[in-house]
Amino acid sequence: MSLETVLSRIDDDLPQALDRLCDLLSIPSISTDPAYKPQCEKAADWLVEDLRSMGVEAEKRPTPGHPMVVGHVPGDGPHVLFYGHYDVQPVDPLELWNRDPFDPAIEVTEKGRVIRGRGASDDKGQLMTFVEACRAWQQVNGSLPCRITFFFEGEEESGSPSLIPFLKENADELRADLALICDTGLFQSRTPSIMTQLRGLLGEEITITGPGKDLHSGMYGGPSMNPIRVLTRILGGLHDDAGRVQVPHFYDDVPELPQDMAEQWQALGFDHEAFLGDVGLKNPAGEADRSALEMIWSRPTAEINGIKGGYTGEGFKTVLPSRASAKVSFRLVGQQDPHALREHFREWVRAQVPADCKVDFHAHGASPASQMSTEHPAFEAARSVLGTEWGDEAAFTGCGGSIPVAGYFKSILGMDAMLLGWAKDDDQIHSPNEKYDVESFHKGIRSWARVLDAITR
Image (cartoon, rainbow, N blue to C red; front, side, top):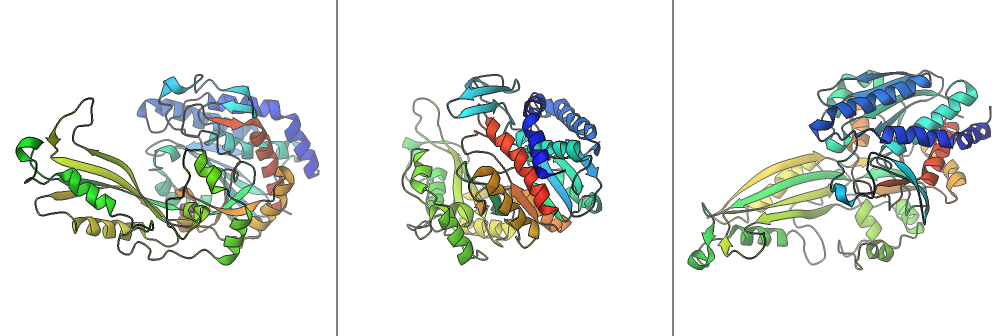
């Protein structure tokens, strides 16, 4: 059967595909809250049964946390592993939702039809685009075009504590020629994007303690050291006037962007003024000699995510606090070592703490950046066919966020990952009223059918 027959089946079956997605979206599989453990189990069971309905040998695998779903389809040609996650973020604040987040529905908006509900875009809708493409292919041809392993996680939104042990314990079973990940989006909501680099992430919490108790600022202000003053002085020196991070060795192992990649990114026509304007800003605030797109995709950052100290309630209280704390995160690129950087940062902070104060640190995760090689012929094959579906030629891009599983596939299983996704910038993932465009869902299914056809020719 021809690819066009598969695409026609996808078009005809779209109403049923939407029904299946809404069924999955109705399961509140919030992984970070132990109260929802039974619902996470239910979502895993739903996926197992759905895969089995397509003839996939699928089963639910236990972990110390939420289960993994693993399914296998034998076949000739390349072996691909498809990864997605069935867990979702919490829905708070619930009062900001226009409808029950787990009562999904198709809504008509000024931008077209959307699927409204938690997980619609991140990641149940994206996951199901690949499943639906495989379903149509199997219905038309009686089999899938190659050997496929389905791998669905239930803890992505809560730090993936079971992922690394599971990958190590099942490495021989899960290893494939290439991993496919659908948890990303279109560039500027229109251009299909194959992400080839992801920034790593390092989190650190600092607590400065001075006096043994809170002090009256009239009685002690002046001679006593204020931990907020110490903390803000340190944080204020994190960047110089040109936006460069001042932690020693921070830029070790940060590569320059290759010229061919820089030219491709420039050709995308990224409008940083519109990008910042959407959130009420105007001027890029990072490294002065870098473009906004470079800052997001290929440069490391240091950001202060929260500060706490003293009295912050209604009214006023003239207190010198005993302690002050801040949370700082670093996005990493290239070969930056998150563990080495943690120590460099701590040494830099310690050197600035006065004798009357002490500093404590609390680590909040550390994952390196991921760089995907595009030498595997599947990358160019996929890029060559996606423009037919979306109108714009597909591009190899970077990603400002972190998807650690892509790096784990490389370091643990020894395989590269191709990251393709169909989300739009306004899908409100992790926020109230999350949505997924019906058009994106439909074209995403068709796109995976095209990609499977291209990489198995």
